[in-house]
Length: 176
Length: 166
Image (cartoon, rainbow over all chains, first blue to last red; front, side, top):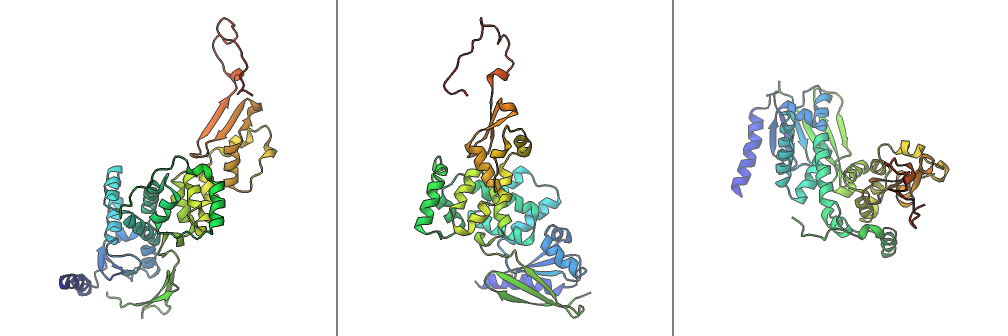
């Protein structure tokens, strides 16, 4: 535990000792970890770039309170590959293999928040693949959504959409 | 050059944050509203959910509309159902015998009409329908319209009415 704290302090103090390096952009995760990235990476993140542009590049420390230090490295990795023009089917397959359902959702929300179009498109496809041909109950569990229909409303919908219940995949165990 | 920036977060409701950047070098406080900062999928903007669903199928979108009332709107949206229609759907519709029978109120409605009732195209010699589950196009062609070698020669082909034919 103590080690964890000291490593966090380390990463924070690095940014403090070198605050004037305008070459890099500091992204601060919701749990206060600083990630230093090249300005080209920031350009991939439209939300971050607009922060920078609106202040004529004088702001180089960007707080991202909605993104955890667990998710941010994935986002940065994807952006790096994207800049290098190395987003291949193989890379995407490997990338997504590392992610469980919860992480995919979190990254999707992060990509939406940061407005990274390519990552958003890619993750939309990933989520779509994971909910394709699944049951209503599975989709609810997948997204952690409460059923807010009344029994009457739900029965009516199920009757109207009875045709969608044939040939649905059996609910497999959630990965989480 | 070091820029001294202080920022504070003001928590608005549960999901939306507002940032205030207070910088001595800038007289005006820079305020950015982050509407996109959402905590869960059902609080995402509708177009985001529609985008995910556009990578699925009409059947999956229908399943999704039963998940919760908040997701009904993106699952039934015009943006989404337009993507399930064939890209050349307006050209197909322009070839119908009786275009007046189709007066859809939404793209979803149009999709449903096209998947329930076959549409007669090109003077009635082609029947067109969408597959309800996948949205794929299906055509039924008139046998009389086909060019078949020796079709006029009763030695090889004969015309026999079948119950399924129109």
